[in-house]
Length: 604
Image (cartoon, rainbow, N blue to C red):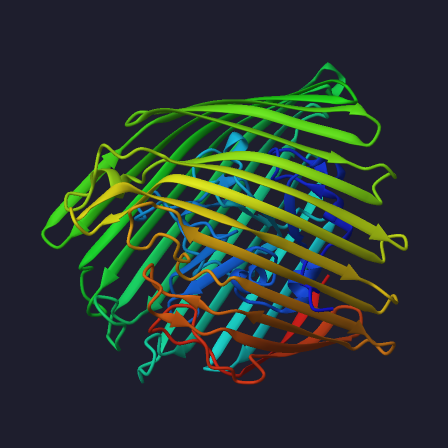
């Protein structure tokens, strides 16, 4: 039971994944390690923050700079947080104006999210730049047949309010839905030992519309928007109470045309996606911003899937993207733009009963540093119709230098080369007792070279580092009786600096705990009450590359309950950090102690 974890492997829709190859695939066809967090798990756990769900899955480590909504990074298998590719409804949302093109998970709440797929391991063949550690794919709800609506409101610790509502349906050729969410809290002091609370306010909306003109032709339109106001404590030096505030506006758009030909053997998708991040920072509230960033990314995508026989699929894709970066503040302005053209091909074949093999290649042409070619291959073999699956995977990844790292007037280096990685893993999945028990075990290794870091000798960015991460991921899901679900995971990650000649050679990479265990159990009582608990234990880590500043390990306990009242109404509540554990995920920043919340849901 020590390796039980929060991997929802018993979810009904867990048999289909889309992140591995960019198309819907049965899990038994995929040789890569993927965790699915489905809508039922999201609702049962009552988590408000997406990161709180990710933290209970194998291979994930995170750090947050204080209060809810603060800057939050997610690391997969010991990679840098900037090496995690993030998608929202199929749109790449890594920030082109960020220092390393990373994605800030702080403002991303669960309100509009219905499914999360986490792919661990390098996968740049399908997803291009940033996918060195892996991919986090965030999906909103699929429109209901006929009509459906949901709403909830909750209140809790630190005057926290959270409310959300969505409605969806279909009629004739049209299906779609809209959702909105509101969150506000007085928060806690982000600086450890501080007294001033740092609150946040977050508004998120999403919408999608699908027009099926015929069985062969359809149009997809999707949109996502986040506005976040955040009070934060000064990070110029040690974190300390301050009046600093930030404002974020994030716009995500997708428009895609889908065409099926040759009796469905050839499907094609052409799409335009758009991301815009506006970030403004204020030393004094209600004044003009002191500095700010704007990042946009306009992408065109084409993907064709040809399946001449049931045992083979061939995928061909082309992408063009144009990231833009603008900065103002401290007496200067910066602006930069680049173009990236990419082509890739992927083959998925089943040469033998129970065996699926995938292989592919991608070439990216970057207007600054030239070309990057990546390869990938994986296999999944089942000798007994899916009861046992043996997986093998090899993936290459690359990450283009960010526009900030290339062109910042103070520290940019236009001669930077892309970061490169090679990732290997082997694993198996075993299902027992008609799916009432599932066990997964994966061993992995990743080597990264040309990693970009700030050079304290030249005060610019350079290709300084090599890193290596290796480890083991284990997960299990049990349903011994219909009313009880127990899930759990354990991951061991040994991530180290391998830059020979460096003073940090052999040191552990910062903020990446070696060991992490999570156990979750939920029971449905005969009279309707549901109760559950999650225990997450994280080992020691270091906050700096020199390994001189330790972050002590910690154990968090959360309990929850919900009770339906009639067919459409449900009341629920939870207590987070039940034991009031004192801990930190980033040195000098606070975390929440014991806190309680309660709410009500309605659904139609």
